[in-house]
Image 1 (cartoon, helix red, strand yellow):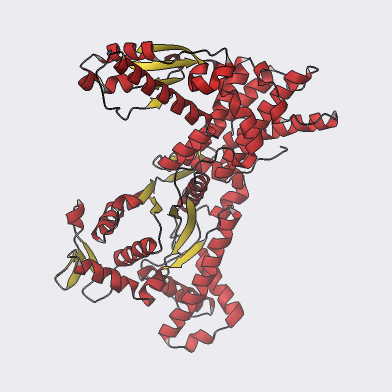
Image 2: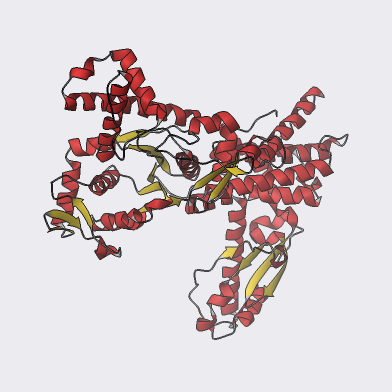
Length: 574
């Protein structure tokens, strides 16, 4: 098993189940049905390496106090011949147990020989890029849809955070066993596209010496003028005398293609590549929007009121119903969104994940209601709400305004602080936390900069192996190293956290929480720096050197794999 923490947990669970069976056989406990108990890592180190709540789930059946049950379990646990590794097949996890105690209301706490984690070191060194992989599901498809910004302007900080979060979530899910599709939903239909076309027309006229006025709700950014200028450079003034609808449609098509390509390039520069670019307009052209409304109507969840068609959102716990087709017969954006999500499940995804801004807290429950109304499991739709980003420079907030064009774009951010720093900073906090992004800190090359601190740990290990090569000494063979020589606390604490990596990946995948990986990799880097500052790795003692070299190689593997899940490079030199 590649997850030795899970292997230990399973072994201790089996030992407890055997203890219950032995206690029942000895008539210390009555026959009981085994409850679904947990063996977990306690938050406080003094509570042991693992703790089980089994005794607290049995009082009703056993008719005994939890602590008394726990004491009976301790009496019946398998023997603990931890000094005799030849018995490991018989004793399993218990060979590492130094002591067991009853704590609190009835927890069974296991304290292990600290060397139990050392198996993770050669495992990581051998598995390399596969170390940490999990198999949480079997052949399940998941779609992660993120960014999906209107193609009417440049990408801003909210889009950038969504890109980092979405891409990292997708990478973690892939590492944990899902078949992942990254998708961008192009909002190329509706009122915003009409306002976009009118704004382009106004700029087109102005650049050709005619009067042009940007409409209320239009787009004032300088990038709109740049697009109109490029159209004129390539196509001249031929649209001045064209029929207005033709002029608007032509400008819109040109600008949308340009903007979408610009978004694609900016995201690729940020390290984000999509598998699918899905057009909202295609839902209207194919009739899927009408089909979605008809299907809901057939199921009794759409009704007519005052000439409009309404979805019964209130039947699924929301405050009010929502219009899906207006009085004029034009469908709403919500109707297109319904059709899009219906299409997702029709494509065979077992799970659908949307990364949305915090202002979408209302649409989320409504869309879950729609999925239930259409006969899909609403729990298969996961919505990650992402809080706002504030940029700071020189201790002052950098003000942003998308409509006037005064904001820091994704391209500008990458140019200023680099892709690695930008991506790491965006996932350092949970999506539900507001993020203050310090541009000055992100640029610094010091231990205060968390991404520099982690990358330097990887580069430091690479430097050790360069020194080894300069001395003409080979890398140690994982199967030929005596890891029993690793006895220092700094060595064993580092090995312990390396053993946790598969567990951290699994938890981050279940919780859709890249910040867990960011926090974890920062801690591993800190443990590596502490170990390195206290002990020499390459010494005259070849056996000890090989043990420490294997430890730092395993650390390098974990740092690289964890950073890769966040879309951050692991440099060999700094």
